[in-house]
Image (cartoon, rainbow, N blue to C red; front, side, top):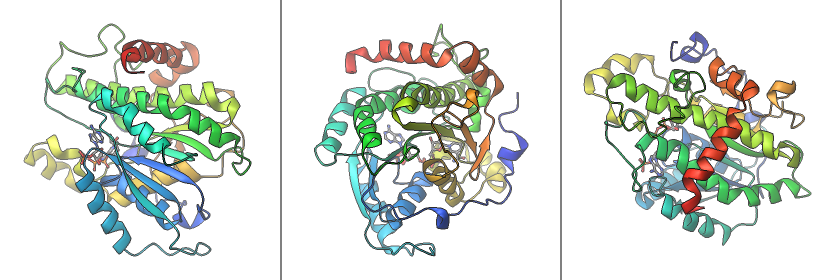
Length: 338
Ligand SMILES: NC(=O)c1ccc[n+]([C@@H]2O[C@H](COP(=O)([O-])OP(=O)(O)OC[C@H]3O[C@@H](n4cnc5c(N)ncnc54)[C@H](OP(=O)(O)O)[C@@H]3O)[C@@H](O)[C@H]2O)c1
């Protein structure tokens, strides 16, 4: 199966713009990996919409540089929002170290009593064979999937509390997972290699695509499962492919590969737009699940359009309860750190 649909690789011009998003004053947001790439664009836009934004990442220096850059950059024009009431904060978060995630959440909870939208945006791609997290998990699995699952586990109570808040309308408390069209390359039949999720034995380019693809399929499945479990309590959860973008994500790729693929990559601003669509579009009028005719648990494609994810992953979710199975597997793997 190709890793991208035509429409994912060459998206049409977006009809969604920042101008459609109302003032976010009084609302609180987390963007993991918001120091660079599309997370940076999301953090910048939400700050300029007057939101209180936490850039969660492992480097305070990178985050502080991003914060200064955002503050000194001009905001895109907006017809109704008066700028200047947003705030930007650094939240220490290392998804590479499961043992540190609870402390990051406690730090956040010591400062805030609500969380309106979180973008699980931080990620790695194409890391060399044998790369592992502090606890020895394969790096893509650990940083892209297990870390975000654990982070969300600790944050779920504040998301649910926010969804109950009198000023939260039905569709505004959201948990967004930045996946990738690369989830199409995840293992068959379900997107997850159930018997060897840590993919310890596989090496080479094909295995690398599987490792990234599996971690990104897990993002899609986690979004769907959060929507299924917590939709009735007012939480919307979506996954999105931000587009093929020129960012630091290509850090592990060879110079030749970068040169060859560069003409096919878009500016990171468009990835931010896709993230904003997931976080703020008002086309979701209820919390009904995708397979029941609603939009909760859906997959979004660039630059902010409802899309169809990999058929094998979504068939597994709808027909084989793979979202529940993955949830239970992650809880079991992570019980030591929960
Ligand atoms: N660019 C694309 O073409 C593309 C396509 C499909 C999907 N995506 C997805 O989009 C998301 C954002 O990527 P991007 O393209 O914007 O690349 P990026 O600029 O490299 O952003 C990734 C962010 O994740 C952070 N991160 C990495 N490891 C981390 C860890 N252990 N703990 C906390 N933060 C960590 C990075 O921080 P450091 O600077 O500290 O490493 C960086 O800020 C990723 O999930 C990626 O898979 C991107």
